Image (cartoon, rainbow, N blue to C red; front, side):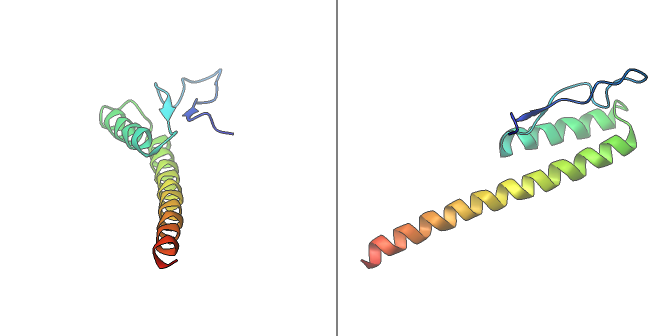
Length: 86
């Protein structure tokens, strides 16, 4: 189970790919992390390949979160419609 915080793996020969924690527990924190990744890349603090990988991974995760949220809303809407039609 994910704790909502992703840590970069420890590396002996190089520094960590990102100098901060990737908070990915919900849409708001994921959006903030994506913005942080973009700012850090703009300052030259993240390698281009790491940046591309992170943007892709965070984008996929946000898409999954949105799908789950939409499914939950759809289920609630169906319950309401059933109650109104009963």
